[in-house]
Image 1 (cartoon, rainbow, N blue to C red):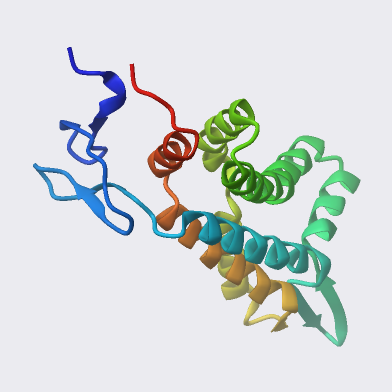
Image 2: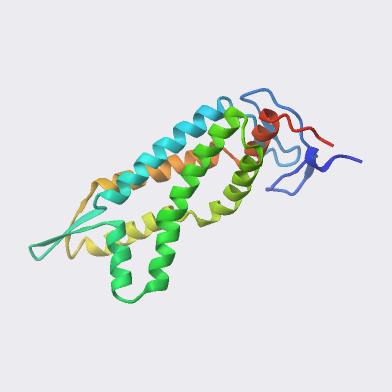
Length: 208
């Protein structure tokens, strides 16, 4: 009977196929739809650390400085992420404010630290059980990353404000855009199945 660890299901056409060991930099494609199943990422450790540190720096900048500078009738005001959350709490919208803290601040921060921690402990080949839990956590946490949706909502609001106010992009706007782009690179280049492959390879996990 085939070991289940050696099998993989294509997420595009649900075809079940056998996993094979790939040389670094190679990809495995589905025999039916030709979509990429998994890849053996070259220099995965360095990429994980580089992407995570870059995203972390951009995320900190995005939260420290104004996203938008708005001028209406001669009155100027700056908008920060924490200002919006504070206003929601101040107006009594505790549930909405709490959700924003989780999806806009806590979740991205924890995910970036998780990628960074995972790369380091796998590279050092320590805390095997911790590495396993971090990968499982990353599978769940990806559904809570909504900064891209938040960014789109800002752009929609800008369209409505253009005719009524002077709007100037702040430093955080570009930092947030950069963070989203880096996050896309992370999701594209470091997939969950590749994390498990890297885990098995570095810790020499034996198949039963």
